[in-house]
Amino acid sequence: MLEPDLVLILNCGSSSLKFAVLDPESGKEFLCGQANALGGTTAKLVWRYRAQNETQQLDRDDDYTTVIRILVDRFDRQWSELRERLLAIGHRVVHGGELFASSVLIDEEVLSAIRSCCELAPLHNPVALEGIQAALAAFPQVSQVAVFDTAFHQSMPDYAYLYALPYRLYQQHHIRRYGMHGSSHRYISERTAQLLRKPVPEINVISAHLGNGASIAAIKGGQSVDTSMGLTPLEGLVMGTRCGDLDPGLLLYLGRTLNYSLDEIEQLLNRESGMRGLSELSNDCRALEQAAEGGHTGARLALEVFCYRLAKYIAAYTIPLHQVTALVFTGGIGENSAWVRTRTTDWLNGHAYQLDPALNEKIRFGAEGRISRQNTPEVLVIPTREEWVIARDAAQLALGAA
Ligand code: AMP
Figure 1: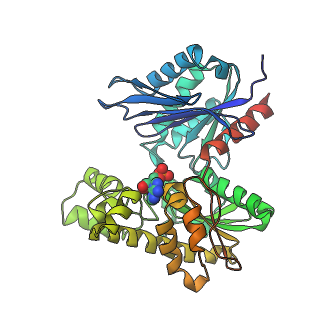
Figure 2: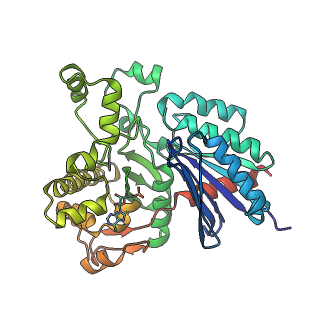
Figure 3: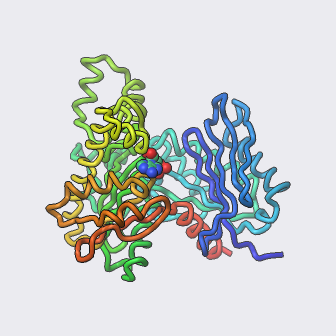
């Protein structure tokens, strides 16, 4: 029998469960898939194994526990060669509050600490817990590790993470900025160091993770010193459907003057705003680029606001970093949209950023590399590998515990 060497990654989102089996050494993926639209009539499980895509319909009342049972059954019947090789299970957990500054092996104490962070991420932490409990029951012999989206940003100094609110709200209710996308930003900092052949402690990186959710981080010598998401993922950049930074007075106006309920405000800011709200067309950057080319004014406006706000954040992050070694684009938009990269860096001419148009067109669709001209500040594109970060942490902790 082979030595266990693979990691199963489980990522329970608000209505989806993504999973993958990876080799933590090489990053090679043996299996990946997701259960989509959980709780709805169109719920289904899709996966890719040995270069074949497969689908299984799910019932409307199939929850995370049921999906994990279905996965266990597949591991027994179809993916048994992978099951035998499972060294660890890595769970993505959105919010670790101030309790976790790194990944941890899961035990009873960790479970109750994750539970205590539920009110900070009510849509995410409870479902992550459900996934963890189901996986503990299904794979009792395999080490299980929690990897937190917030952990990487625990290095932020207090002047960066505090809101200018009465201090007691921080002390009593832990209200502060936490940041998200930590595994992605950490990967970007480490991969940038490899590409530039410099040690991580010697480089300062601005990492722009631009996907349907978007955040940017200032990373000094491998430590996050500021990031754009806050207590929740709503703060910061313009996103697909989230508003990003707002005047908080606007919430009062929506409630008092326009009679919005709290639920309506939540829906508006999370699901109806961002590029979707501005364009009145779509949250999808690629669709917006096509529409803008065809003369759609709303699409053009949404993209302009997105890039302008992003450029302001990039300029602001020269403050904590002093000297920026590289600006890195990642996430679905950052990895693929030459237009967004051009428009954003155009705003930053005062910072001497200059893209090489041919490289900018070329480095897309999974390619990695420099897109700025020679002898100008480094601008890189790096496809993010959050699952690989989770797999590496899980394997390291499992081997350490063995
Ligand atoms: P993610 O959440 O990281 O999967 O990123 C999703 C976003 O990436 C969506 O807004 C997509 O439209 C965008 N995206 C993916 N491919 C492209 C592309 N070729 N050009 C522009 N945007 C893209």
